[in-house]
Amino acid sequence: VLETHYSSSLHGRPTHQTITMDTRTDGRAVDIDTKHENMIHDAQLDYYGKMLATCSSDKSIKIFDVSTGTEQLIQDLYGHESAVWQVSWAHPQFGNILASCSFDKKVIIWKQTQTGWERAYTHSNSKPSSMNTIAWAPHEYGLVLACGASDGTLSVLTCREAAGAAFQSVDEGQWVCEEVQLAEASAITGVSWEPATPAADGPQTMRLAVSACDKLVRIMAKDQAGASSWTEEMRFDGHRDWVRDVAWAPSFGLATSTIASCGEDKRVLIHQLKQGQWQTEALPEFKAAVWRVSWSVSGNTLAVSCADNSVSLWKQALDGNWKRVKDLTDKA
Image (cartoon, rainbow, N blue to C red; front, top):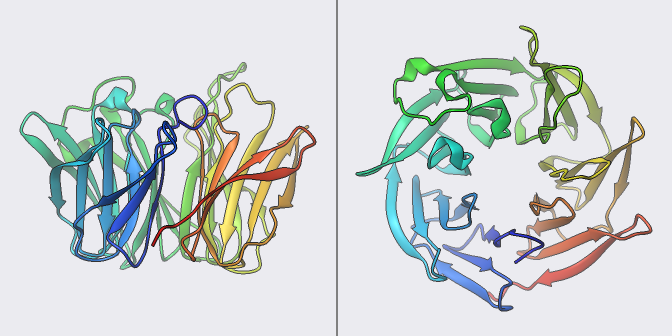
């Protein structure tokens, strides 16, 4: 187990139908044959690490029970008309809810009921553009989902009845959508929320880190107190090529705010807010394009996944430098 309860690290192999789950409880990495009929694009564990969701170019989503150490297929979900790029689990206080996004311009929100998984809501991009990435907001904000599209549209979906209560209705009228167009209209590749922290002087400002194909990472912000719209608050321009992914680190008791970004330039950049100023440093250059970055729940271990199927874990040492602490060797 990584740190406290970071149940496992997962990476999908874009040319395989198998994923590797490293539980680290006994030092073994477990291969799961998902039976997908095409390449896997994403694999995500739920909050407790008991269910695994995968998605693929075969247009399907698969839900597995992995609570016993071996995978058992619970259900196949069909609803998308093209490749499914990402899946994301909502916080369990809202029930078992999963979101998915696809090249078919749609985001589908799924809910587990007593009879199985069913579609609860479908959001279609207002423009003919792929929905590339999704991320649920911290549960303190309610049931809120950020979605990024290839035309540079950032959509934020909010379920009105879900603030602090279980999500019960499948009525599409319960959802409200805010859309913001990035200034350069560049394809969005990743979205990640700033962790929610108590604000001493009133409602907190919600923030999203957004990565895009224009080599930029933006911080988008919205004040919860008023009716303001999402605006660009900050941008980082350290990448030399497409930015593939962005991840805002959890901040349990940490004095800094940290964002990791990665890209086609074979680099991972660490952006840290210290004493009111953002500072950026780069990890040593990787051998291949870097596709995904992901933090442990404690926020001090970063997993980096590259196009050559390599996965490595990194930590910041006491001297402030980032050190590679483990390589998860691909056995294929």
